Structure formats: structure tokens, C-alpha cells
Length: 314
Image: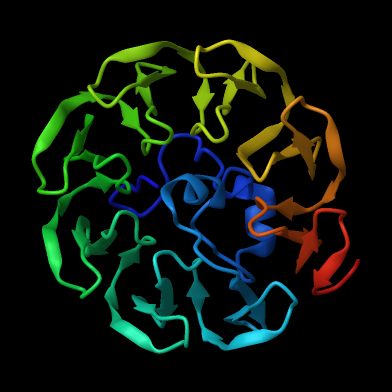
């Protein structure tokens, strides 16, 4: 996901994790889990590649499987989902990458670290961002004030004011011209021109005119957009297919998307029908049949029926 040099997320955060925009919820759970992915985008980029899920236990983060069994003991300060065999984890103030056995494959030395996508991961040293390979070697040296992840062989970048897209060699393919830019997903990327968001193709051509106050990534051919301070969904032609009615909304994953009704989160299907009522303090997308939710400050994982498979039930 695109990062600014301050390591804060750009755009309306396309909700890879919805509560990144919900300051009240974020404040309530910041000490519990910071999974910087907003996993919806991770699904399209291949960020999630197995049934291991980060959980916080007694202030530390480890990983469980889909049955709720501990696979990697909780010993990290923060952790992100596994992607292409590695998970970004934080020890102290530095980030590195572990393998699925919990051993460090790339020692902690970065100030920022995103999941691997297309064999490369965005990392930061000090105020600048670059890209490493799976050996931990820099393929594109840290030089950007903002950057995202590779998809369709392109990644968003910014040297300061404007955003464009680079290829895997660091060459500018779409020159900086946008006020913000997201990762490519299903062949399109959200961009901001002035105060409005639209979408471009991999050639940089605007295919959905800037008209939205906020915009997410396309997943399962639908993307979250914001209109008149409410969130809904459009198709790849830019047509609204789920009316803007939610306070917050996330990307689709496994046929459902997280939405907020008032201050509570639930899940809707691709027709906008509520599948799990809005009852959670915060929630994330489904992956391999389970999703993270919060009951107050307490994290849990639920299955598609809403049954808790790990963590407190209330």
C-alpha cells in the first residue's frame, strides 16, 4: 500500500484495514494489533499466501492457523500477514522478515516494511523508501518519499508532491502527475486529480474520470468509492452498483466486504446485502474462510457464519 515518508497511509487508505481511517477505533486497538495491510489489497497482490494469521497475546504478536492453534509463538511487537513465504515483523523499532517456521530470513533493520508482492517488498530506511528482493538485497535503492507495492509490474511512487508509477527496474513508466495514487489491482489503479479520485490503466490513461471523494482498489470487479461522505461500490465501468450508504467500507474478499453502519462493522455481499450484522468494534477482510474482528479492545477471528474460532466471544 502506498506510504508517505512519515509511514502514514495515502488516500483514504482503501481500507485494507478499515479502522486506519477510524481514529477512535484505531486509538482503542493501537496497542493490540497493527496489521498495516488492509488485507483486501493483499488478496489481489498475492499478499496472503497461507492459513497463518497474526494475533496479539499479552502484548506480543504471533501466528495461529485456521483452527486457532498457535504455530509461531507471540514474540514480535508487530506483524503483517504472510506473503510469498515471508511475513514482515517488528522487533523493537526495526522490521525484518520471517519464514513460516518463525525464523528470520531477513534480519530486522528497516524502519518500514510491506509484504512481498511480485518478488519485491517496499521497505524504508529513515525517511526514504525503496525495494528489496527475497534475499534482503536492494533492487531499487531508498529514494522515494512515498511508494506502494508492485502489481502488474508497476508500483506507485512519489518524490514529494506528485505520484507516478515505476517498473521493477526503477524506471518511470507513468511520469509523476497525480496528487495521489494507489496500487494496481485487476488492471486499474486509483489516482487523485485535485480533490477527486478516478482510475487509470497500466498505460496511465484515465478510464474512470475523477469524481469520487475517496476510492479503493478493485477486487472481484468492484471497488469502494466515497460519495457525499458515504461509501458504496462501483464496477469497472464506473457505474455505482451498491449505493453509497456506509460510514466506512473495505475491499471485497471471498465474496464479502467489511462495512461500517454507524460506529459498528459488519459484512455485506456483492449485492449490498448484510451477511453479518454490524456489531464489531473493528473488522478486517476474510482470508481462507476466517476474518479478524474486535469486541471492544479484544481481537478475535470469526468464520463465515460469525462463529468465533479464536479469541473472546464478547
